[in-house]
Image (cartoon, rainbow, N blue to C red; front, side, top):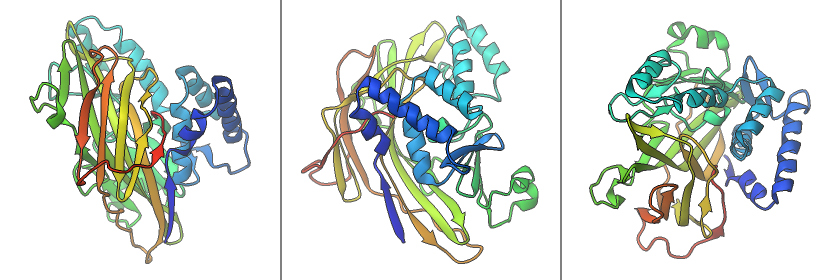
Length: 361
């Protein structure tokens, strides 16, 4: 079993360059992607991005998340790629111009199939990508598709479809291949034992001691979530890549005349300690995100292995790691107070730490 670790590699590289050097680095990486060899590490195939392996996915996502909107759209154009990101940004532009509940309801009816709305809360007028999990949205196309190794994935509102041998005929005719060993349909990504697990929503740390998962101060509210994403990818023959990604996601909203709305804002944290398994790290003195919408994500750790299994066998997902994390956090417009949050499963955490600095994704 071969193990590889990805600790936000390109985020570290980008951090140590000046603004000018950062632009040059990104441009150099884009050229290698768009103008590389016949089979580069990432290329466009059938309208979606095809990646050599999971390492490449993480690296490209880190570079894309460091870009401005204009840079992202230029990258799409250079690749000849229609991304879910660009489609969402255009719809968000339209969303931000809404001025009444009636206009929002008309917008919702118009884009019911292209966006996700919070139907459970009539006061929440937020919008999101139309995918069951948003962990890979930076690299999905408008149809929620991507390819890793030989495996093709498609995210919908209700499930994640995995076709491990990359046979698009199986994807187009799922009913006929529902029992195929190379086809997997996961319909519940948010419970323990599936691919995406919510570890904590930090309701216990709510400054108003209400236990509510949304922290509310005046006309702003903040949602903090610690999650684990797991994914298996068929590489070749009987060899699979398995990956675990632990990340921290924040979403801030403001209250307007017709309910709670997403908006472009900036997030901040300080004194972040985290421990995954036996490894401990610290995000230096803290970090501030770029202006983002609808949320900001920090990848704490991404790791995986390569495993060989018997013919017609799908390997189990890697086990869920034990995770602890604590920091102080806020976002623009909240009130300027850095409030503490704590997900702790270890005695004496944080204790002795390894000093490692990272960025917001």
